[in-house]
Image (cartoon, rainbow, N blue to C red; front, side, top):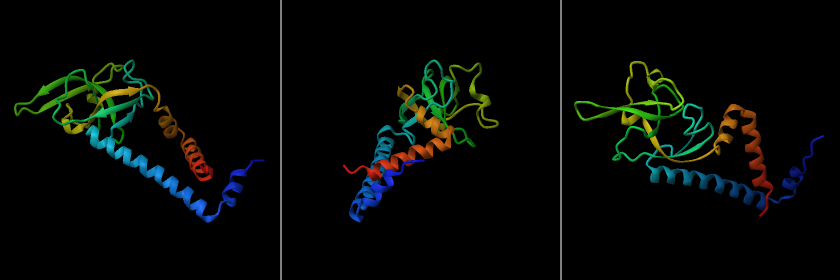
Length: 179
């Protein structure tokens, strides 16, 4: 039989203590959101931190590595840089290396990408009829990484029940932890 001692602790709290715990939880969530928005402004990227979801960039990055991105518009994209880009019609961004640059007559730069562990370039991943990426497709450029820290994110996406268990556990911890 399951042990629900934590429910007894919640029942023993008076209304003021329970309100205080809920307020603490709200402060934690709002602090995390403020940190995220601050990173967006400082790094110039709509998504300053991303997790590598596939093995296409091995050996440079492995599945589960956490990447830190910048996206300063005045900094030109160079061959060999690792960029994170989004394709029209796809929700998940892709982390790949710039393989080739193409300058148009009007001075606009386009580029072609490829995963280090892939045999061919990314034209097969691009939107139908698209042969090159443009600056507007780029979410950011990799500036640093922490190995395997993002594996928790992958586990939570691959196993939704795991996500609910982790979130419920964190919520209960905040509610019953009195310090």
